Length: 274
Length: 188
Image (tube, rainbow over all chains, first blue to last red; front, side, top):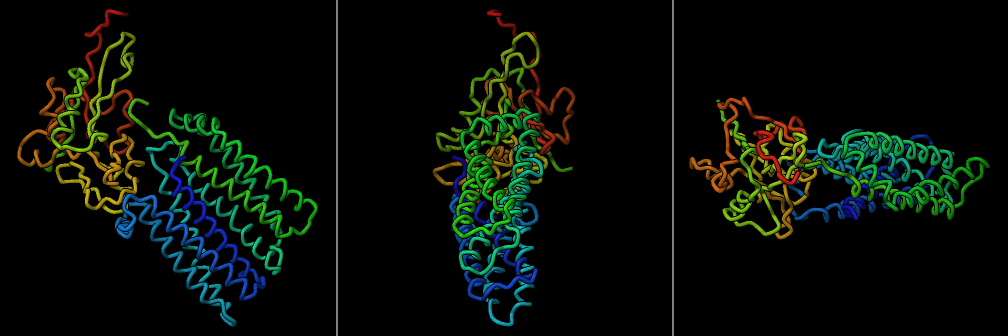
């Protein structure tokens, strides 16, 4: 098992950002969401972010000194990530307070700011791992994978809640999710084939990945089954009910947890003698 | 001109006795599972088709552009004017970012203190005009500290087989490679 707290923190913080951006975008596109549902969604995103932040502390040897991680913003991507996710948490809180009648314009503005902060936060999370010491990560792949996680999980999460609350169907959720899964598959295959033919540390990472049973489980649970579900509904242009959406979401989430676990546990660092 | 201190590792003289590791542990009295200096056995046919037994004694490379210092979110690392990279134990929060970022596997996590540790070139001894414990403890005179700003690098190498690309962080460690074929193994 790789770094469990980092696996949990990165995936659920990216879920929160994806969900927040989706919620803001729905309103920005003129979709009507009731105050009650909006509040519920926002508070759930706030809760997910809070849980993520608490979990991230468990990765530290000295969690109560975590505030010190704000002191090297000039150089450290980790410091920058901490700042962005703290700001993102504050933005969701302020956004939550705007769910009142007549506050739609302010809400859209704060939502825009929060969406930008969150997306930049995810990019900064990815940049932490762009390290020459980790050849398989020393490219755009961590940033791309982290953004894809947000894209995969956020819209399906919001859509599940909206359908469950009998609010509305997210327009073309099946097509959107289908495209996100295909992007995820293509990005992973491209990365895997690139590192397979790369340096020793890179090709060892690819070998570790392919040799892991979790990788093949992830393909089935995180890609193939959700792909089949969304493809069915997209092809038949049917509305997805809450239970199907929740099932697909849980599978995507499990797939992303597995993929992230592989991300940390399969990487081979540069080392003396390699 | 300010000094630029770095370790000189003479693999032609090193016999792999691990005295440097022991001298370091003995001087600093750190925990059993931690090693600030490590001796690696190098592939015997790395430099020639005739096998040559060789060792590489490595500690922190006190890089000109330290990846640990850049990655550390709490400014626990400091690069002194003479080039020595110091890790401030009191500031460390144990996030292990430096462990991930260092291409040479130098910082080590100490589970007892839940903090990272690494070689600081015995800077307190250097400040007194003494050599670091590993240098003083080597019976073969195979390690030294040199000032790269006042020493000719003729005959010295920045790279060594099995040593990650020194240009990633501009490592200040310099190597003297074994003069091949002097030590021919009789079992071959």
